[in-house]
Image 1 (cartoon, protein in one colour):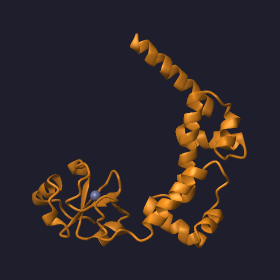
Image 2: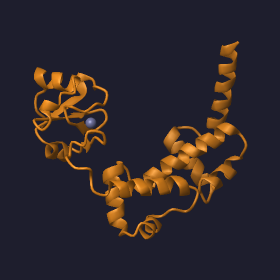
Image 3: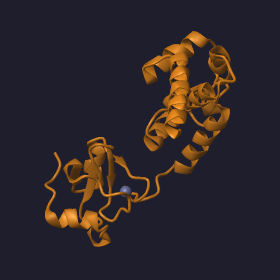
Image 4: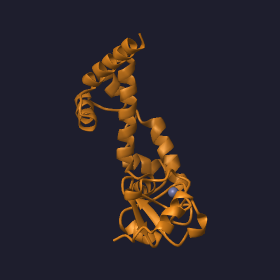
Length: 194
Ligand SMILES: [Zn+2]
């Protein structure tokens, strides 16, 4: 259960009043992130706010600490390490990346790495990698230089069918439909500019 949002609390949130820091924390139900009253992030819609007495209460309800105001106190241990891992995945997304390879590269046990990454990054390394690959695929589809199977290959998929299936799961359309749609959109844009 969360606490009642009083007018004083709401004012503290709106004005980023640091004198209330430590007296309560607020989470935003739409983002699943929680903050200190003084946090400088955009003020959320009032109805989405959940109030907590302490950080533990927020964490128990599956809220994640805001990276900006650090409501959990300290800079989380391992954060720099996770940033490095994320950076490495961004560079090497086209290669076969497994949890074991990450664990080897970053000198850690696989389950420790998985847990720490997920806690600080908000998703597992596998999901993070998948998001990057899909993003790159969309860029390549928009540029029209490569066939779908070439794209699948370049973003690290062993087979194009697997890539297409994942693409459909995540975006609701096939890679070729995505490509066609981009082409139509750009024609529309040109027409609008006339
Ligand atoms: Zn915050």
